[in-house]
Length: 78
Ligand SMILES: [Zn+2]
Image (tube, rainbow, N blue to C red; front, side):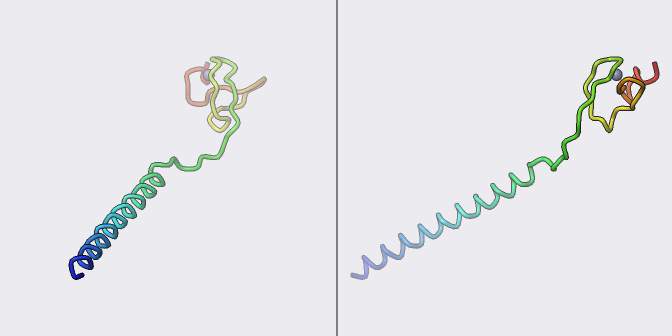
């Protein structure tokens, strides 16, 4: 009878250990996913440069007569 109880305790301890390992893995997995997730970037309307045809966010473009142009690129100074 004592042997049966010892086996039951052993099985219980093994299952508990496996459960703790799985919980730790799941926790580190969710934390890693949250850390790897890119920061929320609000969507910006894209505009097309009328000089070179490149699409860029409107905040990076400078408005000109008849459209937009790249603010930081060579075609802005043309
Ligand atoms: Zn351009």
